[in-house]
Image 1 (tube, one colour):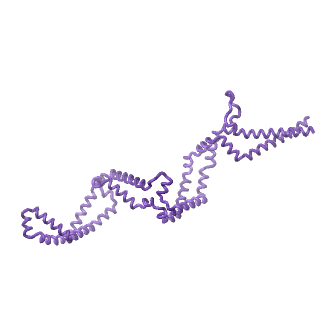
Image 2 (cartoon, helix red, strand yellow; image 1 turned 30 degrees about the vertical axis):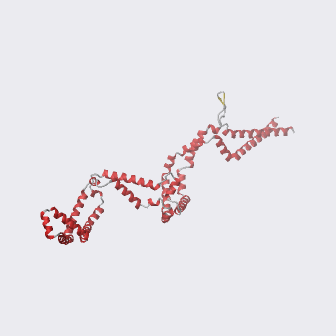
Image 3 (cartoon, one colour; image 1 turned 45 degrees about the vertical axis):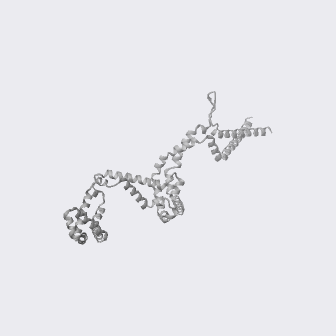
Length: 379
């Protein structure tokens, strides 16, 4: 009976020692959270292992994430996988279809999700600044440049080709004007003024011929003049000569005929009227985006996803290096309180830690059993 009691006692003591030792070892991983000092002397094993190595743990975790978890090779493989590209394409296509059917406008979306309150006005202001800067830079850079060097050759050729048409138009309009009552009246006034400037001779001509008779004679002759082939050639030659002079003029000479402010305003207003983007800003998306939906979803998005993944795969290593992920992880772990870290680890491994404690008790009991047999044999 004494033998059984001795064996049982030593098994129990061994189990208690093993269980308590393992439990204490687990606790000492985290506790105490801070070092304990008695009269300036630090108590051994304070703080616990993890609090003591908190900074080192943070650094090692950061390196582990960069070197083994979030590697460029692994992420590239994921980006290139068909599952990722298909999923990304499907998601973007769905979002585009929702937007295309929406009754909200781009301006409303910007107002709701950004700090931009007047998108169209802001866009017009940016356009005006851009046009003004380019206008000023262009004129400053080409002050001494001839116009023919600035204008494209096809445009110069097109202007020259229009000179005969312009000549015919001017002569035709001149004939038409002279044949109208208003034209005849204006011609009569001009003849009157001309004769009045000639003094006595003019008065004599007016007295003998009469104003109406002189107009009746001059008007047909002028119309014949406008119809004459020689007149047409003369006007065409004059226009050609003037165009040649204009072509040779430097841009700085022509600038004085332009009002910069008015020109910039005209360019901006023209852009606002002619470029549909300005109108799209304030129109509901379903009024203009539907006709582009098919092209965007079937052509642009798949191609865009492929280009994006290719670009990311090519530059992923550089991007990851620029993010300094190891520093981010280290800072996050350092900011993690030891209490929260302990709670997190225990929430995941509480059962395993209990099993380690029970295993320590089991091993302690076995050791106690062996020790009891040794004591009995030696006794």
